[in-house]
Length: 296
Image (cartoon, rainbow, N blue to C red):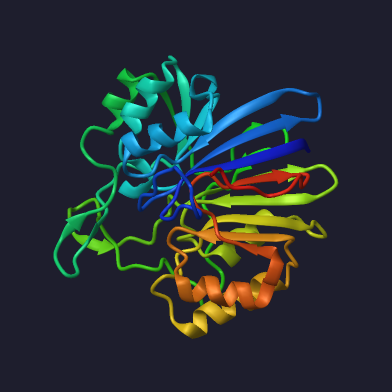
């Protein structure tokens, strides 16, 4: 169990009212976790797609980037990975753990309205990352970052209403295009003493209900879900099924942004009321709750 957790949104598609920060299509989080023994870890989760805008926000927020203990990449898409090499250089450490799925660097592309690669881009491939200080830890199973904070690893797809959320393709070993079901989509689970589990997700390509069911132990309380839920192009039926299924876990907070989409956000607001929050660059969530705030 963690003694406390603080989640700062470093980058997101929106910014709060009167905020001096920059928005971008993408997401990045800064997690400050304190263990039961008083030990602390700083985890950078994803880096958005504009490293200059991310570094600007980091400076404005007073984030001690040079104290990063590990980086977690939730999946391959450019709006979560672009500029990772530049960010690693800004961190300035050697052998810094960069945790992701083994399939992170595969081809990943869309074909509508035209073919376009949307995975990790040139400049952020393994050699560049290692030269910038990364120690790549590519793992498909759950991985403990510290007691009380783990990655999900690959998430089993069990619901009958969730899907990747976008038509993506990759190549099989023979070079043939095949649908890409995003096996590399992973999330983080923080277990906070006296509260329960906090799930931090990048895009929820595995489906947020699949992720939660995979993450939550029997009888465990779901304290919060924070991140993108990739419902921006989902049908109204899927949105309602997702919101209803999530409500069964009675989370204390659902903070959904980035790829969630306005229709889904409105649905969550209708169901969760004051327990729903948008994200926005600079938004801070603390566990135990010490008051949610935005930087402005």
